[in-house]
Image 1 (cartoon, one colour):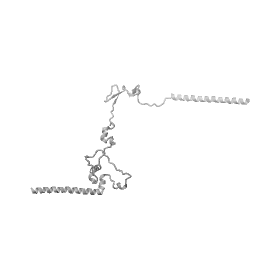
Image 2 (cartoon, rainbow, N blue to C red):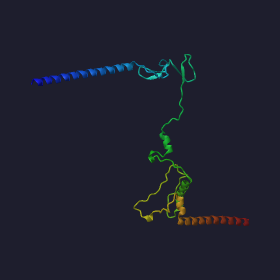
Image 3 (cartoon, rainbow, N blue to C red):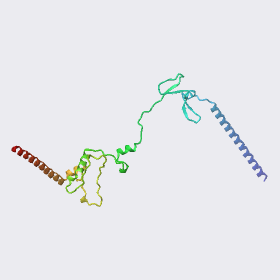
Image 4 (cartoon, rainbow, N blue to C red):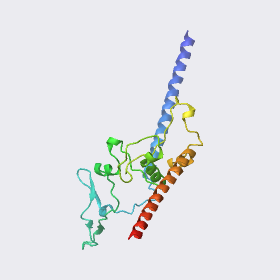
Length: 230
């Protein structure tokens, strides 16, 4: 038992000595770090960057509220090129010239479109093709002899209108639809492509020509007869 207690005491002494050595080593390392930091702080940098602005003559200053404003003691703001006698820097007021953007008014919008009641429909650009189609629509009483339309008393071309395309319903038979060959870009092309309508127009044109020519002949013969009697 005596030997065991001696061995335990020796081990405890060794452990205590090891801890003391470690604490000394750590203390030496910390002191070395502190010394190096102090040395680095004492060393001045070899390079020095300059902003080129003297804070004493700086023309921007903050007020109590933290708002940055021009210092009137350093800068003189003038509309005309005038330099102050106190050697102040003269700054001219620059007016930025540009187009001011503003939303269109309701009245201007109404003149450009039909208004909100008609879904703001814009005015369509009238091309020669559209003009001919509108003229044919006005003369639809003459074009189709089997249909009778109400007389169109409007004068000129309307400002607001839309050109659409009729889409056939799926329930319609193919016989009631136009084929791709029969479909044209304008109403005039469709009418001129139809053979029966062309024959009808030609016959009516000849009838009108005969009636006008016969009237001219009758009036001419009547004038001749009057001259002979006289």
